[in-house]
Length: 436
Image (tube, rainbow, N blue to C red; front, side):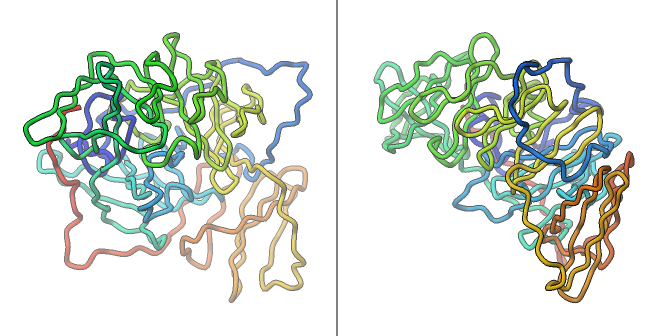
């Protein structure tokens, strides 16, 4: 199978990357089923308030729910926000798409999935691997379900350090040759041998088992001492942070000035949990910040930190936790998945001034949709007569949305679909692998 990935800097870690949108590796049926958490418990003397509330109680059954931290999406060329508004759900070895209200937008009927730097999330079935024939399903930029895939080349930059010269070099993912880096932002650099060729460009070859560091303006901010890293592919580290792995196998987070934000005590996840950024099923890396929050695994049990390095949800709270988008995140607790929200609870507006009817129940979590000529609103009720009103994503839905009931798998809704006119679904563009 052609493996054509939309990743960025992390491809250096894997050692091999093809250009274009990502075609994932082959794997066994249970390779990315989320593991159970260990019995790690936060400090019992801590009086810190857990800074979240439940929007969907943990009642949804799934092998895994995969959300994307967006670090590999190009913010200057973002054409699709599916990566932030939807997640991939895995049930019985198949993949579908679920929204943050618990509605199955696309049923779990596909063999695999991949993400693109444009923000699109694509599911696919293998029809004829030898002939590169696949069935595709994705959500386009207008939030319609379509049965073809975007096709883009990966032009994300990778940076290299020539210790002999003390210089930074840069090479785009889909280029064979590099050049000197003259930018001003701090970048993660990989140890490499650099030789100038006859064309005036540079042949760049990473050393065997390279180490990584942080450099800016041809100076090392952090020495070449880290065994792995995970960083934004397109935007500067100053807007978020960088994760490095030390020689003890623990991950920590630093800012663009090299100062530590979170100590080296975090675990990585299989890259499948993080959205298949790396073309290596054994590769691990943590998440990066979204919405100023970060899901962190410590002793294989999850909590959240904020962008200032403060622990806002103690590790040990969740079996699994995913990135925060629009204030919401998927988490797993006691073997079931649910959605939590950060920040203040939205203030309820006077329903007499709206053309929308909402309902509240006193049973365990259910989703009810009532449609009027103006608005469609989803309401959630928890077991203690809690009420939290959520507006459905911009995906166009039929007039009736199927609810997710307690201890059942998400039920499929039927969003409108768009078929391409007189064209075959484009297969990813097979390009030769540039030497790293």
